[in-house]
Image (cartoon, rainbow, N blue to C red):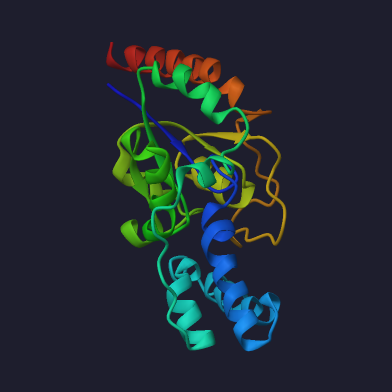
Length: 233
C-alpha cells in the first residue's frame, strides 16, 4: 500500500505567492487608478469573505474573483504562470534542499490548500512541482475547505498532513484521523477556527522546518506499516 503525504501551500511550501505576486499588485494598480488605497479596496472584500466563512460557506469564502466582482464591481483576472525565478524567492526555507530526500521515500505527495486551483496551480507549475505534487486538492474541486476533514477523501490512505495553521490544517487533519504536523512558526492573524473545533487543539508533531520531515515521515511510515501488518494477521 502506498500512502500519501499532504502539504498545505501558503505558509508551508511558499509565502503566499497568489497574494504577493498577483492579488496585491492588482489591488495596487486599481487603487492607483482610483486614487484610493489598497485597504479601501481590500477591506470590503475581506469582510465579505469573512461573512461567508462564518455563515458556513467555506468555498465561497475563498472565491476571490466572485467576491471582488460582487463587492467592487470589477472583473478579476486569474494569474498566469509567472517567471520561475520570481516564485523561487517565495519558497519556504529548506524546502528545495530537502526535496531530494523526500522524493526518495516510498510515498506520494499532494497539496491540500484552501486557495482555488486557478490561484495556486500557476506557481506550482512555474517551479515544476506539479510533477511530484499530485493531486492538488482545492475548495473549487472538492466542494469544501479545511478544516472540513472531507478534503482528504479523494486521496486514499493519508499518512500525515503538513501545515502551518492550527485553525485549518491541524483541525482538518485531526478530524480526519490523519497525523497533523505543524511545520515552522504557527500562522498568526485573524483566527478562523470552526465554532465546533476545540480551541486548544494541538498537532501530533511540531517541527522547526522541513529538514526534520524526511526522518519523521520514515518513522510514521514504519509505525503505520507495523499497524497495518498487525491488523491483517
